[in-house]
Structure formats: structure tokens, C-alpha cells
Image (cartoon, rainbow, N blue to C red; front, side):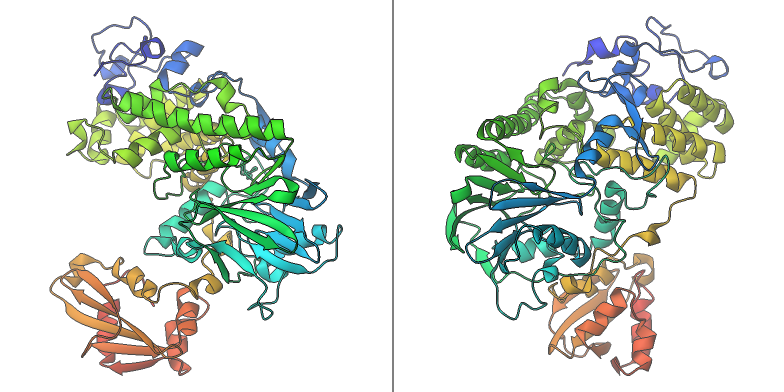
Amino acid sequence: MPDQITLERRTFLRGALAATAAAALPLGIMTGCSSQWASAANVSIKTGLTEEERAAVTPDPSYMGGKTNFCGQEIKIGTGENGEAANQALLDQQAHYLPAHMVKVTDRVYSAIGNALSNSTMVIGDTGIIVIDTGECRETAELDYEMFRTVTDKPVVAVIYTHCHYTGGTTAYLPANNPDNVPIIAQERFMEALLSPFTETATSYVDRAHTMFGDYLPIEGEDGRTSCGIGPFYSNPYVKSFTPGFIPPNKLIPAAEKEVVEKIDGLTFHFYPTTSDSADNINIFIEEENTIVTNQAWGVMYNMYTLRGEKYRNPVTMLAALDVLRDLKADNMVPVHALPLLGSDKVAEELTLQRDAIQFVYDQTIRYLNKGYTPDQIVAAVRIPEFMASGDITKPLYGEFEHYVRGVYSGLIGWFSGDPLELHPVSKEYESAYFVQLAGGADALTAEAQKALDDNQYAWAATLATHVLNASPEHNSAKTVKAQAYRKMGQVSQASNTRHWYHTEAWKLEGNLDKSMVPAVITKDKLMAAPRTLVLDMLRVSIVPEKAEGMNESLVVTYSDENASTSMIVRNCIGQVKQGAIENPSVEIVLAYTVMLDIVLGVKSFDECLKAGDITVKGDAAKLETIMGVCEMQL
């Protein structure tokens, strides 16, 4: 394995920055600097770095104050309508969505854009309309429906879910519970995919999702949220409430089929089950309109990895699905996100470019992996051609190519890069405290971080400030430097996920973060379909082992409205969850499942429900307190 894989980027480092320890020290990093380390008292950040030097520090020089990004495009910072400072590419994308509007694709196909993160599409049949995807909630769906009603007043005769993410507004189109049994079509794995986030990891998953979508940020001001790239926003800030409006599908497309053809209200729909960013994806081809509706190819570069965390998104599966779409030779393509593509030449060109960009990332990651490169080295080595990042549906306005490389590596190999140092590393606190001492103390290293920030070395300033904060978490000056460095990195970022994450962390460092402002993602209508073990699964992963050592107690939860039970045995630091009721539990609680959901969602408290007679405790009530006493999560 070579010692340096991008020598042209890193010439000036000459070893000082190549080693991890040296990278954390404010040592001279200029070309031809002395190989002898200077004493800590004499070292200082070099300012006035050249563009070449900035490009040598990170694969994307814009995060070190460079004038261009990862593939040589010039960086421009603009100000949005609400005062948000952001990469002009993100602001330009926002202009495509706002104000909300409708795009006529054909005489029968219309796409509503700008009311939510996703589009809703109307297909006009012989007697009614078919609605494809229903948005995030009832309120945003009603806005889409109003636009559709300007074209036709035909009734809704079918609903299709391309996948499970944007199905929260169906009751805007159909009465709750769908009494007329209007077909609601989805892929066979729909419910599995819908419930996949609602597991033990739901708390972390939802929080990370809100962070990447910018939901914790204000609407106005320098740090205000921008376009999400794939749509204007995840949680529409201009609607007053977020009423859940999900209705489960009643007609499923088999996941194992390559193609399923259905006649719906006089039109021929071809369904292609596959996997995209969700396991339940179905791509749709409307034969008479020669038009694709898809979640496979977005209006920006597909997110091969998402910062909120997901299972590995296999590019091989994506490539096969995109090739199916290309072979259709459609006249138009309506993505679930961003703008429709109109014209057969444009559809063919953009689909080819996106599938080739995905293959490029996959193949080149493996190429360098097979050479023995580490993830960092691979990221530095894989150069995305500018033309691949410049197509209508390949601009990295949502995620970043650098993260896709890391996603492929970890998906194929896992966390270990091959460097034995990773097997038993020293703690970050110890490492940073040592570097802070070498630098002459926390104040001295913070001063160096400020110098780096003043020279627009954003990533380096954040790195130095992080070492200070690892050693002294309440060092206010280091917090200020790090927050401002993150803010500047967010402003240069072309990717909305990255920008929102940086700005949210800046708010956290400055003590301004308020997470109570966001609408709930885990809602009662969705949890009604969740496995009944979910609540106890969430309890078991909150067990504090030191408190539970030597314990042997058990809890049965019986849902009286469903005649169903689940059990948890707390045994020596772990909780084992089982379906059904075990014999002779320490304690049993009996309540309706709907009451349990009210407790979990914070609508009512356990004590309130107990006092009202909605909960019955059987057995030793003190045992319930004992079990709850070892859990961080409380009922």
C-alpha cells in the first residue's frame, strides 16, 4: 500500500500532517517546512494558504476556504429570501420549488411540487383520478389536492404508494379507513419498510433525520434552513399542524415479480418492484402516456448513503433498476423528488448519467479497496468528473459523493480500515488532552484555532477546537470557534444534508438548539401497525446494566383491546422480550394498546391513566417500580 496516494494534493505536508498525531498539532504545514518539530511555544498556524495547499488538506477544498469544490466548480455563497446564507446552488434549487406549483407532464399526468419534501402526482383516468404518493401529512396533501382540483373534479379512484416515505396525507383524498375500499396499491414489503424505523433505534433515527433535514433550525436568518435539495423542506413550516392521514394499502404488488401489469381506470400501469432508498419501492410506467413515475431516480443525485443512518444501499441493485427504466425509452419521467424530466432525449441522457455516476463511485471505491487503501485514502483518490456532478439529476444537492464512497466501503467491508491502530485506540479525551498540553494549554490551542478560522481554514479550525473541547468540554472560546467554523462549512456546502448538520451543531454549541419545535414523525396511526413487542423492545435497550446486575424479574403487558400479550424478563443486566405471556410474571399490566400509545407518545402519563382506571396492575405493584428503576426509558 502506498504511503501517499494523492501526492499532488499533499506535497506541502511532508509527513507533518500525514500522521494522525501530527495532524492534531498546530505545526508548520508549509511546503519544505523543517522535518525537525519546533517546540510547542514557537509553533503557529500558517495563514495565507494557497489554493493548492487548501486542496491538499481535504478532498473538497471548499471546506478549507478554497474557491472551488471537490470537482473544480467555483463556490458562490448567496443569501436566500429569508436571510439564510448558503451555497448559491442550494438557493437556486429552492427557487424550483417555491412557491408551490403544478407541472403538466401530459394531458393526463400532473405533478404537484413544493408543498412537501416529495411530489404528489395525479393521473387522470377515464372516470376518476389516480393519486401517486400523498405527502407527509393531511395538511400538505390538501394543498396538493387543491391544485389537482384546478384541472379536474373527477373523484379519486385509486391511490398508489411508490414507497412508504410519503403516505401521510391519504385521508385528504379518501375518508379514513377507506370505507369504499378504493384500491390503495403498494409493494408487498410496504408495511415492513414503513415500520423499519420504528424499532429500538427509533429515537436516534428520528433525531438524526430531523437534523439532516434542518428541522431544528429557524426559518429566518443566517442559519435558516434552505431547500433540502430533493424538495423545499421535510416538515412544511407554513402549515399550522401535521395531522396524520395514513391509510394502509389494500392491494400489494408481489416483491419477487419483475413486472406486474394492471389496468386502472382505462390506463395500463406497469409496476416494477425493486429496492431504492426503501425496500418497498415500485417504479411505475404508464403505457398510454409513455411516462415513468419513480423513486429510483431523483431530481438530484441519489443518496447512496444517508446521514440519518440506514441499511446498506446496494448500488448493484440500483443499477439494475435504472437500466430497466432506461430500456422503457419513456417520453417523460416524474421523480418523487424535484422536477419532472420532459422529452425522451432528456430522460435517456439523465438516467444514463445517474446510473453511470453510481457505478463510478462503486467501481472506483472497489478499485482502491483492492489496492489496500483506507477509507480516507479512497475518498482522496476517487475524483468525481465534473460532468457527472453537473447533470439535472446528478447534482449533489442532498448528499455528497465523498459520503457515498464511505458508504460503499462500510457496506462491503465494515468499520475496520485495516489499520491496527483502530483495534484498540486510546480515548479521544486522552489523545486531545495530550495534544492540548503539547500546544501550551487550552487557551493557546484555541488561539491557533481562531487563527485558522480567520484564514478560512474552516475544517482545520474545527479540528483544533474539537481537541480543546474533548479535553475541556466547557471551554467557551473553543465552542465559539468551532460553532463559527461549522457555520462557514455549512455555508459552502452544496449538499443540504451536510449544511443542515453543520448549522444544527453550531446552534447546539452556542446553546440555542430547541428540539421541541419539530412535529412528531412517530405517530399513532403508524404505531397502530407496529409489532406489539415494540414498547418492551425500547425498554430493554434502555436498561442500565449496573442497576440490573443480579436481577431476575419479569413484566407482562397485556393489551386488553386485542387479547394479546408481550413479556420482558430482566435477567442479569439484559432484558429478553418474548411474544405472549410468560407464566408467573413478577407483575402484569393490562391496558388497551391505544392507551399504551398515548403514554409512549406523551399524550397522557402512566399515573394519569392508572388513576383513571385505564390500567390494571396485577401482582406485586412494587415489582413494576423495581423493573422501571433499571430502565432509562419510563412508561
